Length: 238
Image (cartoon, rainbow, N blue to C red; front, side):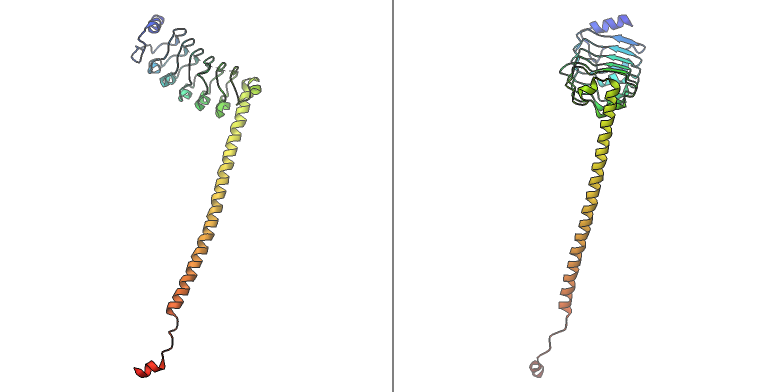
């Protein structure tokens, strides 16, 4: 497996047709290889991979197929040019260690689905441009080691981030609860307003209906009222 891996990394024609027939491969180290991308189908050929090291390259994006590596426990992608993570990152439910540090100006946010990595224990996001963590970040219950150094953090505040993983999870959990509470309040207020509008509409409809009924009745009475008396002179002439 190691000889095949060496061949793969030195192959200048790395592309979607690269021969990924290492289904039994457990560990792959492709670090420091000047790679600018990973083949789109890489995840489908390495289903039993548990450790992937791709640090110290120039990779811009991780293909979505990497999330098919359901056995992966360790992923190191530090010192690349990553712009983010695939939206389906949450499928890697066995992942325990994730290093995304030092992607610098390119890495600005995390997808909400990162909170689905329920077995994640260590997460390094240092030296990036992350301003806010996903609101559901508090769901990472097993996370014990978190590095957020050298990010322009707003949510959570830096003083919270400096206290470690538990403090960050607590802060984000409370923030998520506040968001849910506010959303529920907004929904209730809208429902109340709609009921009020329906009440006014019903009252207005009734008022208009009564007015129309009154006019119709007056017109009917006018049209069906007593006839004017006949002129006696005309009767004599007839």
